[in-house]
Image (cartoon, rainbow, N blue to C red; front, side, top):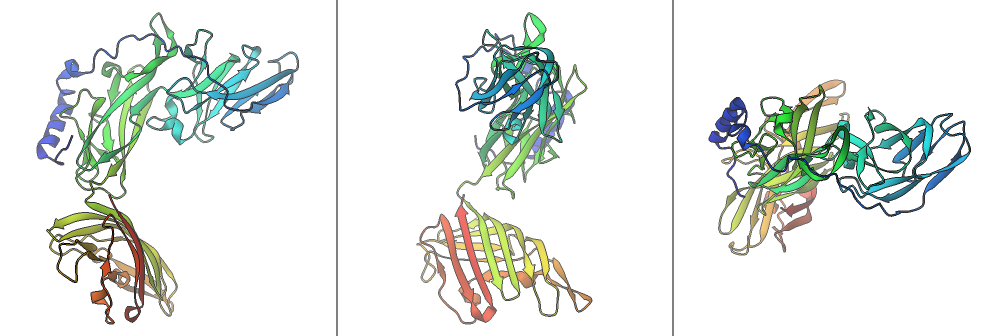
Length: 455
């Protein structure tokens, strides 16, 4: 759904919603999907490769899975005789897992003392969730996946561990997640975001938590959101017109709402939408994050340009956003960063990183013009661009024991044959969706290589 960004009425409505506790109170919260659901029994997983194995006796020992993701620590006294212990990777039938589960053998083995299972988690395990929501669970004989007690989290080691007295098929999932955990959103469009739970107590035994058949929306009555609504974009409460907005006005509930992408692709293009809340029965505070990539609508470019002089080697990473469109030409303003090293005679080499300036609509700085085949000769399908640091920016070099400050515009690059004293042909494109090439001007001691792709 296409939206116009940054309406003043939206912010006012968001404040009113936070003050009133939601759009229409509890009656506006999701219903139906939050009721009891039967446990999600599944088939058993199939082998994904060779198992790792070792013989462990009464003295105890350890074993890791072939991929190193799961390790077992068996204490002394847990086994009375030498036993071959193995970990076999199998397909993860939980659907909410990360693709691989593990079969621990001897299957059904009961130990005299608890053994410790430690899962090493990565970015894929916590996508849309957080490490404190990770739960090891095992598959029972009836096919149901059950949470194996209270896990222990070690953020420094990147592990979540649990103790068990028996072997079975094991997996690791997140109890709560922000869905979708990752997605692309076109500029000016919206995306629905929901907080879901994947594990819940059994209806007839609240002390036993099992995997649901499918993740479902959480019950707002069970959670308290921080900061009035708990939602932020890149750490900005509710977001803003540059990184996108949380649409509280049209929210289904406090944990089921829409993100509105900005009208102009931000730099960087990935924004982090987060929700911060706490279960009313716990003191634990949880933050879930969804990383959204803002996609252009075909009216912008992104890419880089390498600028070379005898005293300069720098690369500009630029997002070009449409500023003006005419029948024969489209004008863009650029934003991004210019990084490199400036080496001037008598001065120490200066590594630098400075913002490039888009300037203003009346006086653009970093800018690009792309002509089409309707332009008059010689500009048919021509283009040129300028890369300039932010206005007023400076660079300070150490020269012969003294600090010398110069305008950052010293490292600007104008890629336009009309600015080269020796002249030369204009730059021409054969595909306006992909602008790339090399250009040099000996009279200005300047060479530039670039690659920009339309988005």
